Image 1 (tube, rainbow, N blue to C red):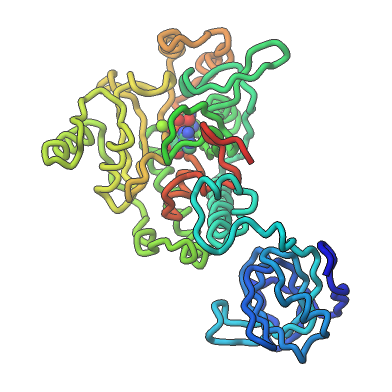
Image 2: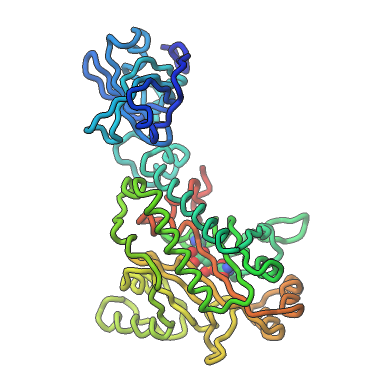
Length: 452
Ligand code: 4AD
Ligand code: MG
């Protein structure tokens, strides 16, 4: 058959079905629209496996049950050719999804040419090759399962806040100034003025929190991270709650509540996807409040002890920020996420409220996921004092002019307030048990990758 040309159209009165729900149609004739995933041939029988984005199903094409054209079209059909299939659903205990399709008709919508086959075969490929073909790689069973878990986590995060009286407020993406340090800003030419892609919506939702009480944002954020780690993307999605009159303790409770909710939702609704990915579900079943809390001082003591025992290469000194190996070590000591609070102010962002007991510490928290996944949440109580905030803006070398509006929030009815940000990709990587965040987003952006 000529390239791109199909068999005659499937003009069936049979209802359309998705593979995920095909059991509802047992014994009935249905139409499935999808792609050829794989094909096994055995004389007068063909065993195509179809996928439709919701699942896989094996079809049985018997030579005497279809027209000669249809049999010829399916025989030798190439992987990822698009097909519309009509068949009768039959329960089969041995089949992976519990059902098979006795095929009566097939329309080949577009046949992948023999001379230019689908580049991703069912055998192993290297990661660089797969990343270069990310637009096709997302079709694989495992990648599709990860994307479904991601969608579930995003929906669950929104449900969590929507159901607790939070209002979604969208901060701008083009911003005049830094939120999380000037070293990771992406500059944008904004009509001959310098602007930046946002690093976090926080500063803006502090303003909407003063208007609405409890708010959150969910959107893309950008960091010109020069690091090439398994945790860093240059474009990632963050969910950020901000709460008027809240303290550090309040948002720590909110954070453990959110994380537990996300995990429970995935266990409830995406169990089969997690199984496809190969996640150890027993580890996720343990995720429930309360999470252990560890002060920075206690964390330092643990790290120094680990070094003394030879479990950590370098000795951690009080006053520094935790590096990836330190976070990995700490988080592997607990089977729940651990909340490390009160870091030295000098290693944290300019907007954090000092601890009144020890002003050299910030009222902040990093939540480290277990199994060595490291930080998935960063949050804090925000500076309340106009004068201190202005001083910090100067100490951090930030332009006061760009923060005038932010300072206003401390002038016109300022209140204690707090919030945090959770990186969606870090949460997905941990919940799915993935080696690298690059598989958690359809098209990852990293220092050496902007294609496809
Ligand atoms: O700790 P971060 O930098 O905190 C903030 O941006 C605050 N303004 C949030 C707030 O208080 N509203 O980032 C928050 C989270 C991290 O814990 C991590 O999960 C994720 O965002 N994150 C990244 N994820 C992927 N790639 C990167 N380069 C990331 N940088 C931060
Ligand atoms: Mg952080």
